[in-house]
Length: 139
Image (cartoon, rainbow, N blue to C red; front, side, top):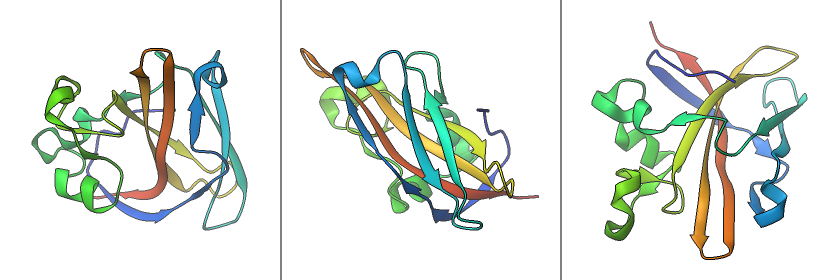
């Protein structure tokens, strides 16, 4: 799990075994699998709430890594409702949204995972993976 610092171009979206986790399913961590579209290897990822990931803002701030329009067009995030704007302009399900980079264990293709985590309403804590996309760094 790592931060992405260079501009990237997105590729195929990977198939994910499970994308949404509620309450006790998020503790102490979430583990799911995704299939690499290049080699069909099943990879595991583990997300530890309040420990994993980097703020999605780092991606679109000054179009540093990806532009807002690319994030929206690819369904990685959506525009945040005005009542939750304190989480940033772009979020997943109006919750704090994070990302991280990972790689296929077999062919070493690079992937970006985007997810949100937080309390949707009192007593309902949700971790929702928006998706996992293959990417290439641009020169």
